[in-house]
Length: 339
Image 1 (cartoon, rainbow, N blue to C red):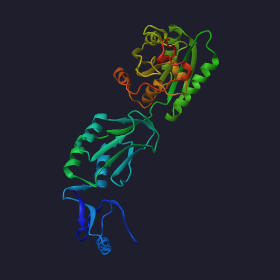
Image 2 (image 1 turned 90 degrees about the vertical axis):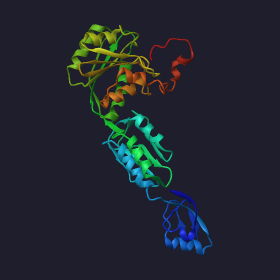
Image 3 (image 1 turned 45 degrees about the horizontal axis):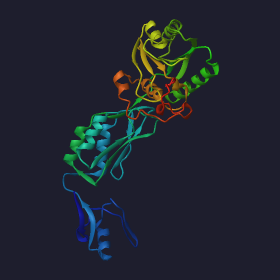
Image 4 (image 1 turned 45 degrees about the vertical axis):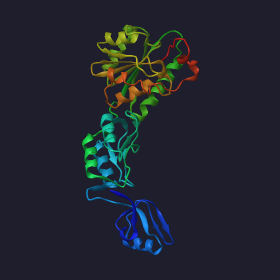
């Protein structure tokens, strides 16, 4: 691609680098200059025009953007018709955005003329939401550059994992002093979190805050049609030997990880009984505000496994907005009970 001043006599067929306005004539930036327009420019006294001339192996910006967007788009995305070197990707279904981060990094490292941007990986998205964009910076790229970007890509590097789990069980453990109204509000917050995924609470129960009755209720709900169970403890989990993890193990399950580097949300526990996930919710899950519980819940609803390795990678960006009513526990020395 050649960029620079071009004699108007040779401008026909080249691409205008800037918008040009003459009486009765507008040549827009990026438009191909016709022979008639070149003649009009000469008649108006222009000797040269800043334009782009493509080399034989160059691929135009729109065609290049479209090819790369289609190369990375998964089956649950649609690619919009490109314009001005940009091809946008949109969610075709609601779910959780999945991104092959190394593939995106490889593509962006190929050449400064090729860029790919996405929303944050694992962000919940709705149908029709823009989730990524390919932008070709100049008016064209050499074929070898596009080929290198395509080699760096991976099929389905950007996709949406549609929501799969729709039936959730909820158990609240009770201690003296825990008001029933708190449980009601907690279940309301959970239902609101489930609604965008088309999921509902299909079983709910309250048990004493003790391992044996909780284990019994866990077995009952796991044996029902609930596909996942969330346990809201009357007291925050303090140790792997505490009530909720002990009850999961007594019910025949296993604790996969306790704690997460997301604040609020530190005291979250994930486990499994058979093939069904169990979440020991942190105290902040009673609040409708975003916290670490949301991140785990959304992935599980989309059928995305959440492992210890996944949780330990959440630290960067894991410091969420302060909750004023807590008295800024992260800045003082007081121990926090409901993280």
